[in-house]
Length: 329
Image 1: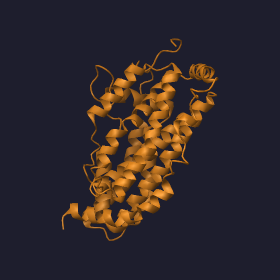
Image 2: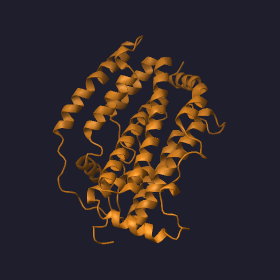
Image 3: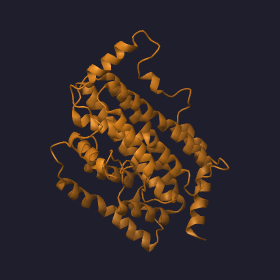
Image 4: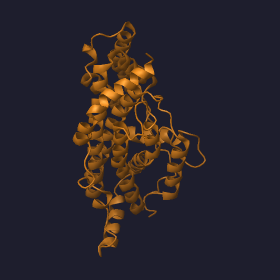
C-alpha cells in the first residue's frame, strides 16, 4: 500500500473523533466573541470620544511594538492562503464536506476574527500607514507560501501544532506589553486572541498524538522532516512596496526578538513541549529509519539552544513603511 493510501486511511480513522474535537476546542458562533465587542460602537454618541481615547493610548506604545502588532495582524489577514492550503491536504474533502473539511471551515471562521479586530484597531489608532499595510497584505496573499508540508497531513499537523502555540505566545506577550502601558482595550483584545490560538494548538497537537497511535514510524519521520526544514512562520514571505519577498519579515522578526515577543528560545521551548506531549522518547515499534529520526529530534533542541544563545539581533530598528512616527497623527 502506498504512503498516500496509508495517510488517507489514518485520516479516515481519526476523523471519526472530529465531532468531539469540534465540541471541545471550538466555540459556537452565538457564544464566541466578535470584533465589535472590543471596538467603539459607531452608533453610540461616545463613538468619537472612544476613537480619541484609542489615539491617545496609542502614543504610549513605541516603534517596535507597532511593527510587531502590525506584523501579527498581517499574518492573521493572510488567512485565505492558510485555508486553501489545508483544504488541499490528503483526507480533507471539501466536495463531500467530510468532517476534516468541516473542521477546516470552522477553524477558519474562528481565525478570521483575529485579523478583522486588529485591522480595525490599527485603522483607528492613527499610528499605521494603512495603505502600505494593505499592500503588504495583498502581496502576502498573492505570493502565497510554501511551508514545506505539501499535501501531507502528518507534516501539516506538526506545522499547525507548532504555529498555533507560537501565535499564542506572540499575542499573549503583546497583550501584556499593552496592559503594562495602560492600554486595556488592546491588551484585552490580544489576550482573547491568544486564548483562541491556545485552543487551536491543543486540538492540532491532539491530532498528531492520535496519528502517532495509528502510524508511529511514518509520523515520526514526518516530525523529523519538519524539524530539519525548520518551521517557517506563515508570514515568512512578508514584503513592503518595492521590496523582495521576505525582506520585511526580517525586520518584523528582529522587532519581535528585541521586544521579547517571540524569540529563538521560544522556538526551542515549543519543540520541547511538543516532544514531551507526544512522548517521543518512549515510542515503541518504530522502524530503524524512524528510530534514527527520533534520535535526531531528541538531540535537536540542545543544538538549537546553542545557536539561539549566539543569535545577534540589530539594536537599531529599521524604519518600515507600515508605521507612522509618533507625533504624526
